[in-house]
Amino acid sequence: MIKLRTFVVLVLTILLSGYFTGVSICAERETAPKKKKVKYVRAKHGIETMIELSTDRDKMVREFNIDTMNFEKVLKGINDSKIKAGDTDKGIKKQYGEPVVVVPVDNTGELERWVYKPGIGSFFDGNKIYLIFNKDGYLKETKIINAGA
Image (cartoon, rainbow, N blue to C red; front, side, top):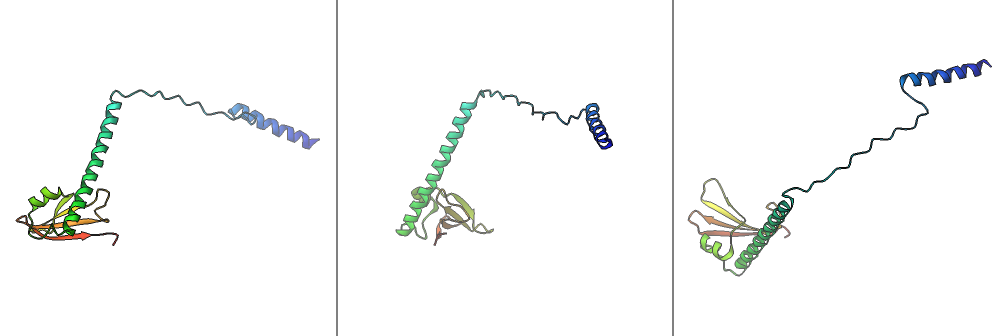
């Protein structure tokens, strides 16, 4: 009988202490408050921004295609021996298009390297063509770099 009495007192103590401290053993789990629905507002210039992004992407794709076409024309010109040492930079640019980038070969400024590459290629790997010109604008040498070869 004493054990039952001790048990009842213990249970009542726990329940009452929970009542006064705000903790309920039998209480149901509280649910998280509902999130408010986000009301989307159409941006004033949203469509114009989307059109501009699309146009910029189209320009980028066009540039990639031009780079690839120029690379293929220069490659064909070298393979057909139409591009050779002594050609002028102006003549090559007119005939085969702008290079992707022009960089100095060294710090002296005596030589510059024109780089032609396909639009999807990387500067670090992938196919490239180097046309190296002297300071007077005459082609000194050509290099074809095949990353896959």
